[in-house]
Each structure stands twice: as structure tokens, then as C-alpha cells.
Image 1 (cartoon, rainbow over the protein chains, first blue to last red):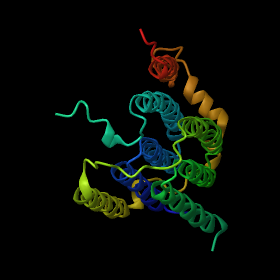
Image 2: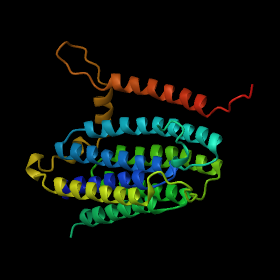
Image 3: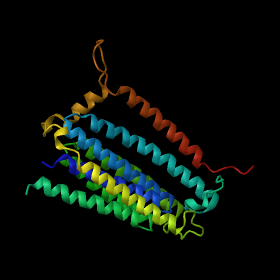
Image 4: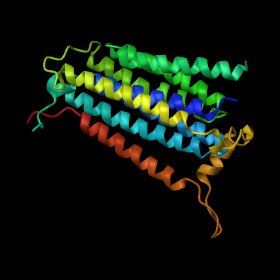
Length: 100
Length: 181
């Protein structure tokens, strides 16, 4: 039996990778993909802790997180398409019209 | 060594390496493909955690539906190359700072989570109770008929359906082509 710590560490590592992706990439699609990595890291925590507590609630929350992620991906990608129509680029540095 | 221990380390390595590949790629197409590999590894980890329902939904919803949506957009925008930014708002110093901060976050998480004592959690409860999809369904849709009884997650489930509807309408409205008047 693998101790719970290992799952938590793996999930923390994945979350840090996702954060690094949001910080470092200059592409809107890759940034959205990094957000998906972060959501999945949290899902892994829910399932692992639910397993060690012996309840199914972790899996139920994972199910809800997945549906919310689907909604987020749909709206986020619609925004990416709308932005691409305006500026013909995916670099977030091009969308600074609201910057003070 | 136990088979499940080897399985855990192999799947964890696949997941982490594929995720690193996702953020190390210049081509979004390869990023999406590598993220599907990473989700496959995670789904294997869910199987090791006696959560077959989560493993299957991970493959069907994430790898099957959401990633195909991403792939459609990558192909639709024909954005197979990340262009070199003409004016990087952050600048090279800012990028270095961001890299240092994310590495720090990773180290902090590793340090904090490795200190969680295993005694906080019950020692290996029986797996049959939580790997049963029937139990998940009962917990999700349970309605209280008597006063003292606990409700399931019915309200959250219905709220999710409204959220999906709103997201669908919103996506159609946002991505619609504006008519030139």
C-alpha cells in the first residue's frame, strides 16, 4: 500500500508544473492547458484522500470538478477564438488595450 | 516489491514527465497530445486508488471530450507555432522571476506535504466500499424522506446542469462572428 503522502506530493508537483506553465508560456491555449493540469492535480488529491478516509465523496467532487472544467474549457476557448479574430495572435502580450 | 508500488511510480513518472512536456512545448498540438498522455497516467493512478468511476470519467470526459475541443481550436486557428513575442510585457527579468517563483512554489509544496503524518488518515480501509459505482450513485442522488436524514448532492448536480447550459450559451455568443453593420 502506497502511503498517502506520495499521492499528495505527486499532486503538489503537478500543481507546481501547472503554475509554472501559466507563468512562463506566452500562448493562450497552452496557458489554458496548464490550468487543466492544475485542476487535475486537485482531482488527484480529492480521490486519494477519499480513498484513505474510506468515503466516496472524493470521487463525487472529482466528478463536479470535471464538469466545471468542461464549462471552463468551452468558455475559455470561445474567448480565445474571439480574441484571435481581433488581433490574429495568441500571445497574451498583444491584448493590453485595457492596461493602464 | 509489490506490483502496485511499481505501478504507482511508473504512472507518476509518466504523468509528471508528460506534464513537463506540455509546458515545455512550443507547438500547442504536441502539448495537447502530451496532456492526453498525462491524463492516461492519472487515470491509471485512479485505478490504483480503487476509483474505477473516476478513472473512466477521466478518459471519457477529459481525454475524450475536453481535449478534442482543445484540438479543434488549435486546428481551427492554425496556430501550430508560438510566435516569438515582439514586445514581451514581462521582459526576460520578469520571466526569470516567474520561473524562480514557480520552482519555489514546487519546493514549498513538497516540503509541506511530505510532513503530513500518515496517522491523520485511517489505515487502508476496505476498498470494496468505495470502488462500487452503485455507492457513488446512492451518495450523489440520495433524497431525504425523513426529517433527520442527510441529503445527497442532488442540488449541486442540478446546479451543474444549469452551469453547463449557461457555459454553452455563453460560448456560442462569445465565439459568434460579429455582423458588420
